[in-house]
Image (tube, rainbow, N blue to C red; front, side, top):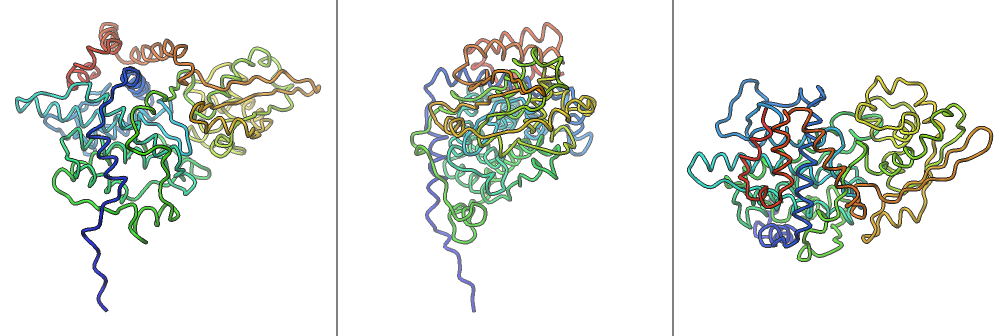
Length: 483
């Protein structure tokens, strides 16, 4: 019996076409979106500079084959490396994501849309250096900010109603999809080529979430986004070489993404793609105060407020109750042994315990030296999470998108402190005016880790000038960050 030949003229999946339309045709008219993208750029590169102080991150960077040189390659901020755009995307993406301190989007699926900057900046820098060598005009940073806004929108809007973690897939699948769409466009791809590249991203094998959960929690979660945005650049490049796409990569019966990996369900969209704009960038959550999983940000803030009342009475605490939302319980409510940095920064009990005991929460507090303090695990065992349905409802409400937590501390003598509740973290849109000065300070502190004062000030002056930044050639901007 002969096998049934596939229909090579199948009508392409509508979502592929709609996303390509959005990337090519939508004009971003929001000054707020561009201003927020500028802060996102600053914050992401600041996080990358901080990551370079961690040897576990640094050892992953550079050419796969030591000594390899790439003419007109992309430069890696904070280093001396010049790499091909695929490896450069991995390095930049990994640096941005390493400490879990870059921006966040919370919905049915959560994620970190600034992860896409790894691919965007690497591709734009390489493309610009190549253009200069050929006597052509380089891309300007306006194009990078536009790509960031659109990548945020693609990743964030797909995440609003679709939970990939509930089928065991990691959210970095959306980084790959968003990055491949905007990078293909940045590199001159046509509408059909963007569709082809998007189809490749969906056909790709997708990362499992197992490296984020016991018993396998590990450091891959810190480079998974770098891997995804790097893979997107590779898929964009082979598509631009003429590699074919797969028009029904999502919907093909039996073999498509929906049937194989999404339990036969198609994606739900809160708004049609034709109505996408810059909503996600305008509403993005910045991690201003704490390098911690975002569902725990307000819990840490509550604990900081309580620190002064409990710091001398830690041993007298009988219980701590965290009133929280369902997603926090599902993702970061952990009991038992925590094996490493990756385990600890995704444990709400650990985050609250450290904040109550020390009145601080830094990336160093997830290291073994701090974790060895026996008071942390003793207090962790006394901390319990309970879901408040109203907190869960407000978490999903598109007008609120709160990330609420409330803490109640009870002592062995039966007395309790008044509950402290924080609904919106300082990095939330509703606290943007309050948060921006802290975001600028965070950027300044991170620049000071690597650069002399004169260079720090030059970078800050440029990044605070929207018009000047947008007109700056990408290669000249990146050169400011090279050591």
